[in-house]
Length: 252
Image 1 (cartoon, rainbow, N blue to C red):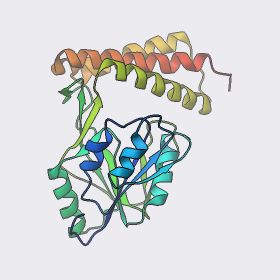
Image 2 (image 1 turned 180 degrees about the vertical axis):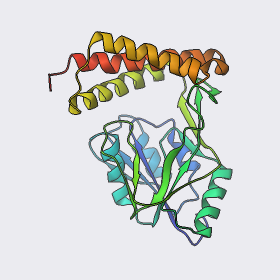
Image 3 (image 1 turned 120 degrees about the vertical axis):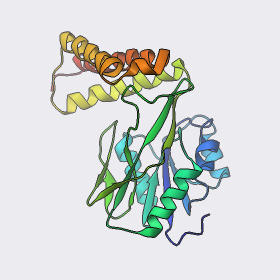
Image 4 (image 1 turned 90 degrees about the horizontal axis):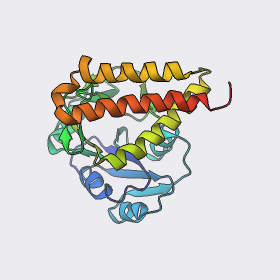
């Protein structure tokens, strides 16, 4: 626990994250409360979270945005920090958060630069950095969008920016990448369906090609070495499958 007069709740959603939870919860053990909402893990995630002192709840999976709003509903403190299981709060970021909240101000939320790694390499190009994400906010002034995937924080007031990085261990290996690509492309196809958008094979190929060019060339992915090329390929593939999967869903 920290001695700051400003109390902070940390919220995390999980599924089969047993390997990540000790590092994740350990990085925010200074917070006044840590809340985990699990969506039915088949590994030891829930037991580990409870052993580490997190208030842990289990709910069926409704999508990223809705699940994070469930976690938010459990928070008791004025300020909330939302992190994912594969993210870590460094000592420098903790110090900046505490100093910022103690200083006060008109902001109701803060965006944080996120430094992600891919197969062990920190990615500083490819459109991956600084990758600002709004994760720190007043509980009474923000909520998550209800998107199935790529949810965002919707704040009803001024949003500031922090300087220290949130560390993101995004993909440990290619197996994990393929699993997440399949999950995200399926959710993305469902979102296209719900928005009423039709797709074609031509669109799938065209969007995939543009995703590669944007990532590898326009966003300087080539400066991230072989991992930059792999990220550009993966981005193109994920985009292709999102549009291709939509083709086989019912007509809206």
